[in-house]
Length: 136
Ligand SMILES: [Zn+2]
Image (cartoon, rainbow, N blue to C red; front, side):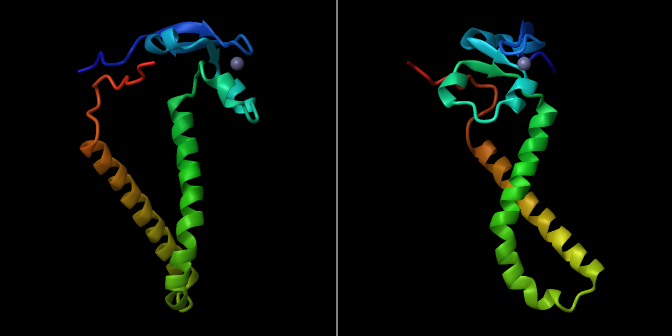
């Protein structure tokens, strides 16, 4: 069953003028639109300037960036512990075994985090309900 997606309207990027799409429900709230190129090129956009800006971030791009950031974050946080606890046994492994062990550990942690997110989203709000709670 489809039809849950909101309609998209063609708009122009307020910064470079490029044609882009904006979901209808975003259109009402957005004063400006920013295409992904402009978003990407903007070094450190001040928050208040982007407050009412609808930014067109392609979903696949977003997934890629989130995955990348999550990976870097996890490596920073988890690797030191993993390294400390496994250092001893890793010493006796061949390079292939080592790579396998580390690859496996990465997948394990990744899966744990995904499962955690899934579980929390199942316990939490039901998707499809209007989560618009800003009253002022
Ligand atoms: Zn643009």
